[in-house]
Length: 538
Image (spheres, helix red, strand yellow):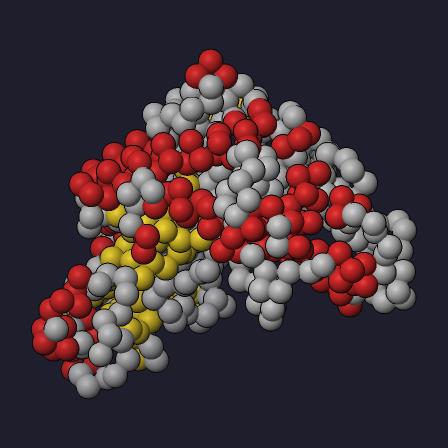
């Protein structure tokens, strides 16, 4: 029987599970412990909802609001502040007020109801909320042992709702918490005791965040500690912009692991995290971390700072950019009016991925490997904290095609396309300055020029004449090829599209090889590339 591999599950930045505020009477109880995600957004929410709703909440000053103008029902849970609740015994305190007065506070375990003690003196509530009846005695308390109720129950968790019942009978869910029975946490302990080596194969749930030094990871450990087991851990994943956090033009844009986060681009921070800063935070918190080493197309989208950002600097030379079928390289703010990760994203210009962009590739390899070397050292010194690396979360051909432009027609891409079709040049292990050996990527059945002409319905005389399709739906010309087919059914377009996918996949392979060469374990290197269905024979 094979042992399961270590698993890392990415999760969107979000608040930890916590009590809901008053006024959510119609909201259905949460039934899952965590919500898993396959991708991720790279911006941090800094656990706003946890800080806002979690733990004890002081009664907010409302002034002299009258019952007629005040909210119908308000309140808060003082303790427990943790989520979820473990075990069968629950002790809870809080306060509740209703416009018509409070008749009861009930703790409901699934469909079972238990009365809490009410009328407990709360002078702090009376001072902050004078507009409600009985505000001086707004406190409630509850202690219950549910062991008999939960005995033999196969469910791992239950919903515990705190419901305020007003004197007019109106009900309001003040908060919901999850109650996890003790047996659920030890259900598989016997199997693990038999095979203790499995305890080393951790499943880690990663909170995707940024701005770690400014509190982007605050609350992760405390909020999710109850979920820690011998085989389960909570950690975080943070983007490191290795082409943006550099030593600047004066330092030839070399990667800077201690990049000064106070540097600004207008009213925005150039970057929110430095590599060494994230390492310090993970070490101090003793939380597993995954490094999203991102030098891709959107890593520079926040604002244009070529004096620091290497992508922005390289984009100033159109030879490094992706070209449209009109043989043009667009400015970076071309899509400034479209939705993006930040207002007016600088994402119109994308760096090309062809293998002849020697200067671009050398810069990228240098900076990525500088970051990877530091990560590899961290992995050796703190193996229990190192989850892995994710590479270039947005490596792809420019997707902004709604204005009739399609990519990438950079002259270097066209040269590589011709060699890929014919299995020549670097695909035949021919040494070309700056280009890698691509013999292992050679087509199983390279095409002759005559084959290409039949596919494209052309009469090209030389390989230098070969050109990819340039007519597409919505480009202002036509969506029908010279053969009368829609472009998506045209075999020549299929060759071009397959090649473009190959170039993106090849770039991911190279990124992985560059990182592995610095000592990062190969089984800890992950790709963020979307799944693409394979095509037979390509």
